[in-house]
Length: 212
Image 1: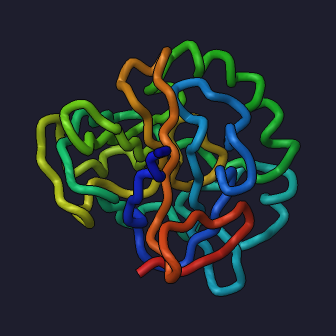
Image 2: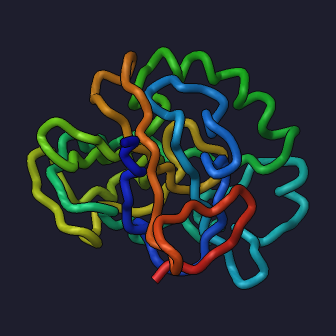
């Protein structure tokens, strides 16, 4: 019998937009590197579905992360377990919603990959469901916001940090994934899901939903 997905709680409350969802394709981010085959991204949005006010800078320039709805919102543990990695200190980048601003950033992608987990995930927390895993990564947290350290035991909904724009991120969001190992070079992704009205569920890319 094939085991089902790892069911997690949403690591936030409020209105969020799903992006790069494994409900649409696997690998969801176009790669299996770093155990990311079943990863999903979440962007906080307002009642109009916007992550930030839309002005001229969104079309041609960079934007301050503080102008985005998600920046600084509390991020919670989506499962109970032990914190096995907690990285802080990476800067929060300016946001880049435009192609003009985003192209130079794309050219630095290879350098971030060479930096490994810190370069890609930025400030992040990894929680082990058990000693042998699976291991749940929450990435792109705000610099200086982490409230947990390696070795801490957390319960579901324990605040672990805040949404940021660190690592490989073009606007404030939360990246969630599960993997079978902390050896990121060889880690394999683990399917995940979240509680829904009719059982375990995954929002599709572009879907806006409210988490409680």
